[in-house]
Amino acid sequence: MSEKVTATTYWIGYKTIVIKEVNRILRIWAQTLIPPVITMSLYFVIFGAIIGRRVGEMGGMPYMDFIVPGLIMLSVITNSYGNITSSFFGAKFGRHVEELLVSPLPPWIILAGYVSGAVFRALAVGVLVWLVAGVFSGFHMHNAVVTFSVLLLTAVVFSLAGFINAIYAQKFDDISIIPTFVLQPLTYLGGVFFSVSLLPGIAQQLALANPIVYMVNAFRYGLLGVTDVALWVTYLMMVGFAVTLFFICMTLLTRGVGLRS
Image: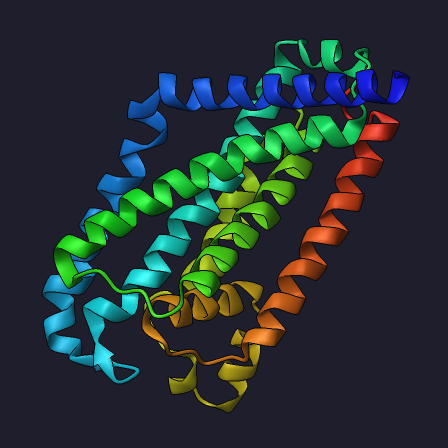
């Protein structure tokens, strides 16, 4: 009987955190959902419609089609990371994260709730950007299973990474350092606007050290059927990152690093 009550308590706690996160995202939709769509629309117009005419083809397909998967992944990465850093740091700053810490909820439930909220925002933005992309280049779907699984795993990986950032952040400026100086450069150099196969030897090897290259290419395969990397390497890497980051987050939460005065 106690196990049933405990499981029910865990489910209520998880559901409460997720509902709170989703309501927060939808309540300020003009800040959480619309800006990424407008930004990506400008990318489609400038890089796809205008510059794309001069570029011609990339990877054997129209340049507009080529950049669609990368731009969707760009929006998913930035929104999954940014949502959880701002939300969890806000909970720290407002001191109401302490209510979660003293509750009967285990750390993994707290982590799962915040990650689920970040994944919701990332997928919602990704779908909206995909719909906008359809206006410019049509709707493509080569393999739905690969498309969704890569999208989901990428959102989970960067949500977990953002959670670590939020734990260590001491002020609001701290939650923008990693996205600005690490995440953004890696994303733009991650094969969003170019094919890694076009790079010379050393540059190509350096590019392949960037994990975002694998995520973008795997997602490009899901939508368009072309990739510069092996899919199994991508899945192995993403699962490895997710498991590693999960245990780091659990360790930090359990020890109360950055959470207890």
